Amino acid sequence: MHVNSLLFLLSIFGTCVFGKNILIINPIFGFSHVKFMTQMANVIADHGHNVTLFQPFHIPLKNMDGLVKNKNIEILNYYPDHYDELLNTESPTFPMFWDSHLMNNPVLQSVMMPRMIVKELQRTDEQILLDTKLHETLKNKKFDVAIAETFGISGFYLAHFLDLPCIPVMSAVRFQVFNELFGQLSSTGYIPQIGSKRASEAGFLDRLNDVYMKFFDKITVEKMGQLQNDNFENALGRPLPNWKDLISESPVYITNSNPYLDFAVPTTATIVHAGGITIDLKKLRNVGPLPEEYEQILQERDSTILISFGSVIRSYQMPDNFKAGIIQMFESLPDVTFIWKYEKDDVEFQKRLPKNVHLKKWVPQPALLADKRLKVFVTHGGLGSTMEVAYTGKPALMVPIFGDQPQNAYMLERHGGAIAYDKFDLQDGDKLTKIMKDMVTNPKYNENAHALLEVLSNQPIDPKMNLMKHLDFAIKFPKLRSQVPAISHVGIIAHYYLDVFAFLTSVAVVLAYCTFKLLRKIPVRLAAKKTKND
Image 1 (cartoon, rainbow, N blue to C red):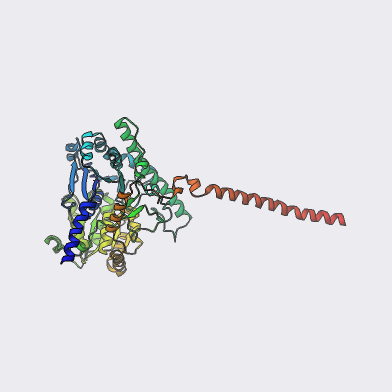
Image 2 (image 1 turned 60 degrees about the horizontal axis):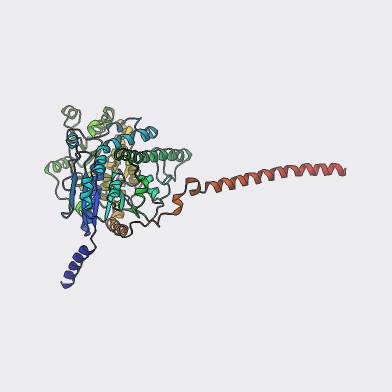
């Protein structure tokens, strides 16, 4: 009893002495991004730090209740001057990504997507950077460090104005542009691109496609950063530090990657894998009873399938030919119950569906995934859903729509419990039915999904502890960059010794040519000598 009391007092004393004032910049845009940053705030506050969650609104996101669980977190919601306009405007959902071949073309996407996304962020971001009263308020709170996500770069400029070291975070698995700033080699070949086979099976055309896709993917992300950089300079009327320089000042870069789930890629100590901090295994295993309406649905048939394409891409905006393929699958599997997250009341569409389908504008996704009666999850492959699938041991049909979703789909597929499915094949009802029937009846998917769950449940370093250890380290050594290889600062020619290979190749060619010429002369001289002797 005395030992426990002493440990408790020491923990309180340690918190009071060592707890830091941390500003977490959490832009309200995509739900998965918000959820990751909020959970990070919870973890950091749970470990005794004083956390302020600064939340500038880019969209009027409504499903945020309950995300902040630690009562000691101070929430600063920042509503821009045009917030009323946002309230009266439907949040951007980007329906063109469903089937637009233009938006799915890497070349055109590298031109169109950065402008489209930056436009949604611009007005709020510029107001934040121009709001000197806000800056003064935040300065008075005497923060020790800031944490900002690299999806939008305004947080790093805000931290710069506040004279705070800023730790970069990525709520997705990885983006090559940012990983390279911290010394990681190119992941080309380690992670397959859309349309490519994995390295062990890849041929020349797959490798060519990898280079092509990766090149324009990198251009897309760099364009997003530079557009924001240019916009901020125009708004403030003065030059600003380059966005890459601000981000790369940190001693660590925290990603939502998990080394036991993600592809294995050579990396550096500066890149911290915190994937899994949004998951509470105890809660997933004890979710409590489902709402009565879902309990009744799960009792209708032996097998139930959940379909949800996330919050940014809406099912009701799906092209009609895609819907037709899915409806054909419903009709072909009458012994399976389907729950489809469909965000709009549509009486006419409901009439087209067979009786084994339930449309719901909202679903208790974690609770359903934890229920053994749910056999398969059809998902867009957002990282939040991907993590939930992996940590519940549930088979999944991954139908990536855009962004990092294809990579997430391939990442989960390689463990054998999921299938990555081309969204354009949703219109093929026969193919969809065949795959879905196999996933429901073939035990290998369930066995492989549970095998992955066992690995994640027993990984040697807890993601939350990994996050906290590196965060404390970064706060103590905010300018340390010794773990970033020096060769990362040179160009591609010096980095990969292309000049040396070119030189050695040239020498080899010259030597081969000289040897060839010399060997050609030997028979001629021998013949001439023989003629002379005769």
